Image (tube, rainbow, N blue to C red; front, side, top):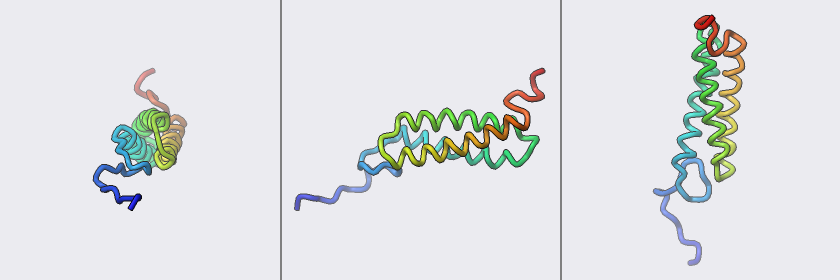
Length: 104
């Protein structure tokens, strides 16, 4: 049979090409976690420092994941994490910013 089954042990969670992509998977996970953290803490006005910094780092991680992604599934998940981080970042900036009240 020409189409032999491949073992799933080497497959990446987010890739569809059957190859492992640990750097991309890690960056996507970081972007997702920081995006969820930024959006969740954006509901609390006094947590604007945590919100804005988590959003900024999530944007950077999501951007790197988007740049390094190989498959469409990785790109899709990277954009979702990037978008959540950006929403949290913008709300955190509106509530006081990265250094609001600490410097100046």
